[in-house]
Amino acid sequence: QVHLVESGGGSVQAGGSLRLSCAASGDNYSRLCMGWFRQAPGKDREGVAFIGRSGTTYYPNSAKGRFTISRDNAKNTLYLQMDTLKPEDTAMYYCAATYCWSPTKVETGRTSFAYWGQGTQVTVSS
Image (cartoon, rainbow, N blue to C red; front, side, top):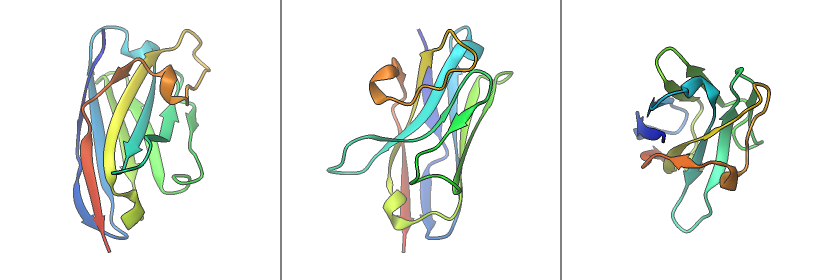
């Protein structure tokens, strides 16, 4: 069982930055594939950044060049650095995890993730 707790959300003006954190409890954090998703009111939940066990990352076009995902296996913590934020980035942001048996695999599908945090709100004003 993996328990995830996000933090770091808040309100920021367009062009600003935020850093989200996700603390994971449970064993074998280093065997987890991790991801960040977001969901705006009335919209589907979408992935914004993913990282595999070995640190390999993947970003969809909406986040590429502005968001950076990283992990600290010693601290069981996942991060999302968000720069040049836009009003359309406003959403609830969720941390997600699932066990990956291959160190090179990067999971990206929403249904692939077994564990989810409660979310942290990010609001970007124009």
